[in-house]
Amino acid sequence: MRPSHTPFRIVNATLILPDQLVGDGAVDINGGWLVAVGPRSSMPASSGMALDAGGGFVVPGYVDLHVH
Image (tube, rainbow, N blue to C red):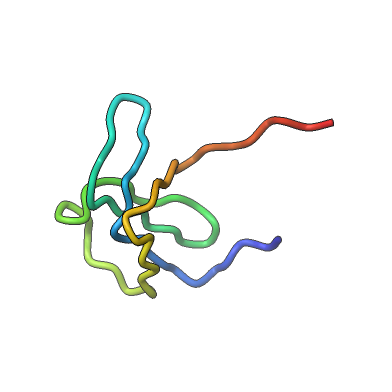
């Protein structure tokens, strides 16, 4: 899958971070890179589309290294 080069924000997520859970979290992605992660209230203004996670769990930066 090719990364989207259009900036977008995942909102209404429960973020699973190394040291805490963040309710009503948001993640900004631009050019396939994570550019901001945190509580939605502390995020910078976004010019991209918003995707509603519906309160689901999001683990930003997680890479599944399980291969066969």
